[in-house]
Length: 299
Image (cartoon, rainbow, N blue to C red; front, side, top):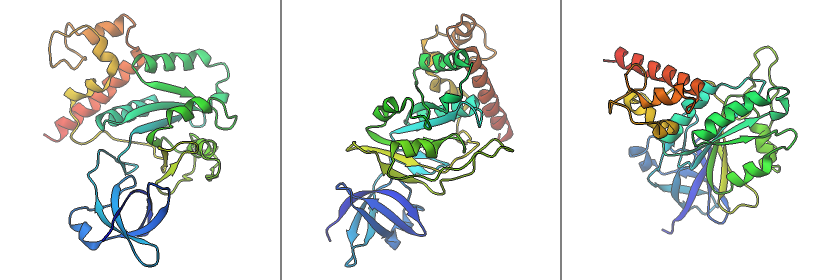
């Protein structure tokens, strides 16, 4: 039986849409035997399919996954575009730091995107301070306005290769950004609730779409979410390795330094000298405390 290789780009009601290398989309069901080795098929899975006489297909094999992102559930991701809004809803930098840590742990390149930059008003210096903190840490930061089509060319260039998942709170403008990146898709855009200051969910399931004028650039549209937790097996000792700016600080006295209460800590010295952003360091301590409390709870 001849098999074709493809990528799962969406799934609903027990059927999966598989994109073949030539761009053809095939509606498929999985073989029953796959349930013995795979509990679930995810968007982003690389699969082998066979064709049925009616033009639909059967998923015969699922290839090994490079990575996995929970909530939204998606696999084989190259980049994660973390979208925040400047206002409506207000940006959450602790949520951003959580997502940066999770992306790096999964070996996924994170990109930071501030949308609704047209609402910046007189807060330019505040935005610049935030941007400087993250660019000094080694992250790419994009300032865009989906409604005014500002900054979109630079963002398109960053998304032109590989599979990028777009993630962030509801209401930050992911659907509006998607409309700019994929005008033919015309994604549904939800109003932001004036009472709750957060958006209604307009994306109901995850799907991967090819970016125009790009042979190998894809973007995943995912349902919004508000809270994301660090993995259950995440330890306090490993948190610091996902803060790239810490690596540039002077060595600490203790190899196992958590950069909190330990003496002769190079990271704390760098924070005091203004070489590491004070606010981001404080958010690191909040995440560290959460992990330590969880470790004590489950001992």
